Image 1: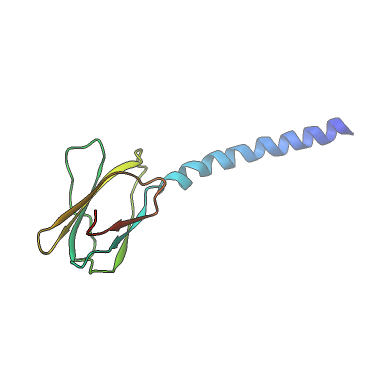
Image 2: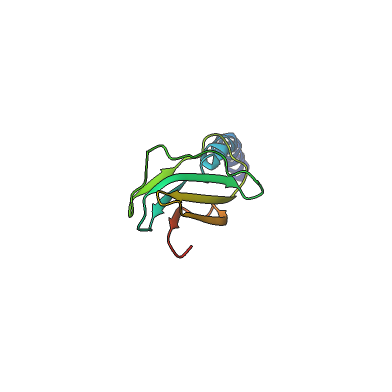
Length: 117
């Protein structure tokens, strides 16, 4: 009796493993997605995100023209970005720039851009 129950349990565990392993990459694919909140009094016109090891800020990723004071938006990564540490630069209508360095986007869900940064 014990052997039959144990065998059925092992078969069930074996069959469930491929399902779990196939779902893991899908679950991790967007772990860097985050919400950016403009907590300044200025209008954000550009947002640039780069891997912390990069010397290049890359292109403006805002899908809208601007992010007004107090507004927020979601930044969605496409593909399977391997890094977690990123630098973020916000540029405003008055020319002011605010950047955040070494943010672990795998652990942070919201990035607040404020005057104090």
